[in-house]
Image (cartoon, rainbow, N blue to C red; front, side):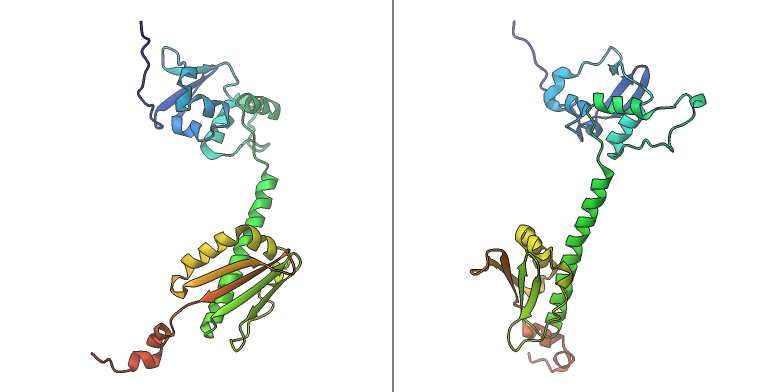
Length: 248
């Protein structure tokens, strides 16, 4: 006899009832599978339907610490471990969970808490990227406001120098100096992404971004920014341009 298989796909919004040693928690399948590297995130994937064996009441039973599982469930909902010494309630409330008990449950359910120190460091690093791009934007806007059309950026591992085409307006040489030790890596590793961002930020400038390694110094990146905006567009926006008579 051929064994029938259930080909009906499960819905990510299916409600799941977890019975943790008598304490019941209800959530959505999508909440659990959002963390596929964890025990429950793996178990409730579509491909692992054979691992899903609810009891007659449609619940999934685990012989684990039902009270500590509160923090496990909060991880799936928030992405954070919300337990700390300030949230531990007194024993008289019957909800006192020790750090050791929580660690046992996190280990069983294969949840690895993030290191908040690393998160903080990465956030600070991201702000450097933001500030570098903001400095580029400010430099571009100032140069264009003076009818400049080309900016050269010369970045090494220890310094960054900004220059302009001869006969064009001067560029403040210190505008990027605070990024002396970071501009090289940014232009080398995410230069294309920065260029795409500038294209979308200033579509009217028709920016051309050219980046290449120096022939004389392989640890030097040369970037040429050219702005192909229309002087006619600027003239039309000037007071004279707006006042001049229109010829049909």
